[in-house]
Amino acid sequence: MESGQTHCRLAEIVQYTCSLERDKRTGKQQLLCTQLPRIFKLCPGKPAVEVTRVADVNLATGEVDVPEALPSQIKAKEWTSVIRYPTSDEE
Image (cartoon, rainbow, N blue to C red; front, side, top):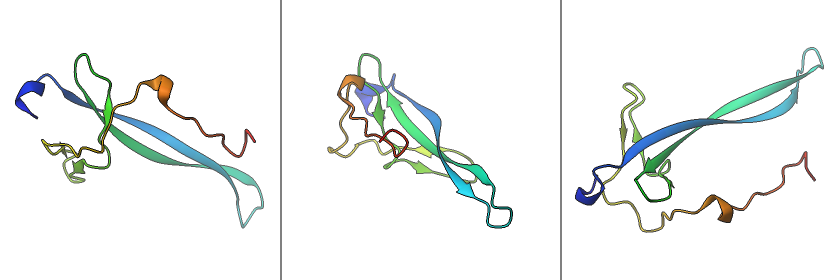
């Protein structure tokens, strides 16, 4: 981490995306869900910044490495400015 950001920490959340799929054998619908892990950089007094795309995760150890100099295109947003798009269930 950069010297001025020594109090920053990383946090992970796991979200799920689910869809109804019809079982080819039985014809019954079943709910299939996929995990979407997301990694955030949390610094005191600043909005959380998602760093999932630039984080390097070691799958063997679970260790997460985030580059010290984050790309300039990563911008924090207040939750009030996040755009929520309707899902097919809401249309």
